[in-house]
Image (cartoon, rainbow, N blue to C red):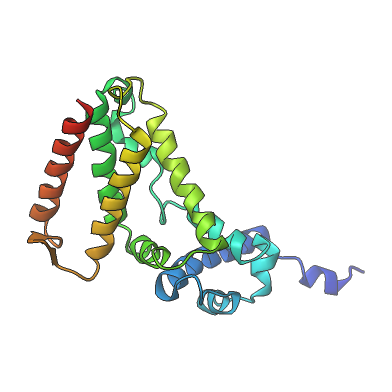
Length: 210
């Protein structure tokens, strides 16, 4: 006769995957609401409606769970999303065209992810091992995009510094749009306002990289 105690402790694969997905979704929601300092296994487990022990069983703890969330398309756009239908032609684009395309698509992608904007806002004032787990995901996505660039930028242009400045500016505007309808007279709640920003991105990239 089988040991019923052992049988009852076996989690069916389907249930396991469903539970993992619930925990991943829950940690994103809780991070967006309370930030990183207050984030804990109890809050996440309560949001997911499961035992907190499962966070350790499936993800080896909170850091592993946050890293798993960071790899989801709900949190961060993949290189494929940023490349869009231009994957074949993107390598041949002039540097200023490619850079402009990246930052415009990147801006639109994070604007469509409300939890991501909240998490980026928290990251501006908090930093720990959990935030580091998310930083790696973002860097990987950008590198995969720019690895396709075959044409070199003009001599003397510090491409790394340029990317940092542009990413910081885009993040700032996107995060501010959560609570500010306008900034410096630009409407951050309208398509017209974001179109103005996109046009300026084109002009900046052309001015620096042409």
